[in-house]
Length: 236
Image 1: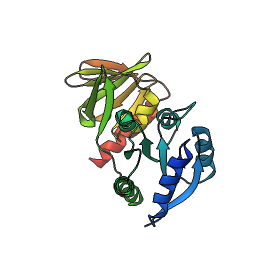
Image 2 (image 1 turned 90 degrees about the horizontal axis):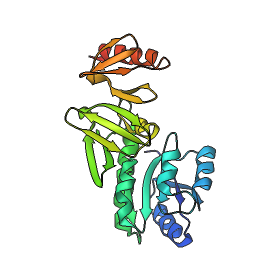
Image 3 (image 1 turned 90 degrees about the vertical axis):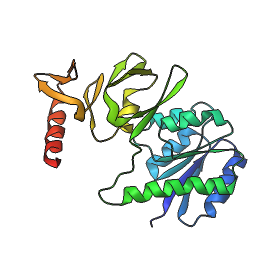
Image 4 (image 1 turned 120 degrees about the horizontal axis):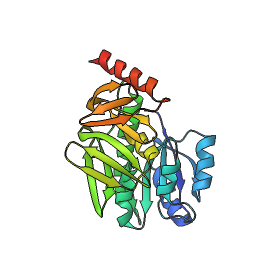
């Protein structure tokens, strides 16, 4: 297989050294650089090909979580942290895995093998590796929501509303980040709405009917929506 190009982002030199030494033990990992903060990492991502980031969560100025959310297209992420309670936040941004410091080599190897599986899936024509669900935190609970159960998602101030056939979940999340995490059946139809094409009953004018709701279609989104529906019809 092709080498997986990785970088280490951690403000603690000793933690960097541990992960660096582990990377050198794995023949298909190629270390491209060491960064002490998110801004250095951002510059390196722009300058070189990066497939995987070993990313500390608790860093000054910009945390690992906020850094990933700021990326338009994120490489695979394995979080490293001294705080296990951050693990849930890691999975909210589709991290491959998280490692709790001090990191044991056996646990490191398990995490990078997960990354290798995802990498190989991406390299295989016609195959994509997606979990088929999203994880959201709402009202002190962690929800695992199957994508096939989602009808549409609405932006609601600093929150989003996820409408399923049985309930509505309100969570703190950005539409942009959520859109990047959704499967192929989802499409943005308006600055405030993402819908499942499987749930659409019909389009009338600049509105789409889902269940008993009519949702607006933004003028700049309509052509993409029509194209996506036609592509789905040809596949079926």
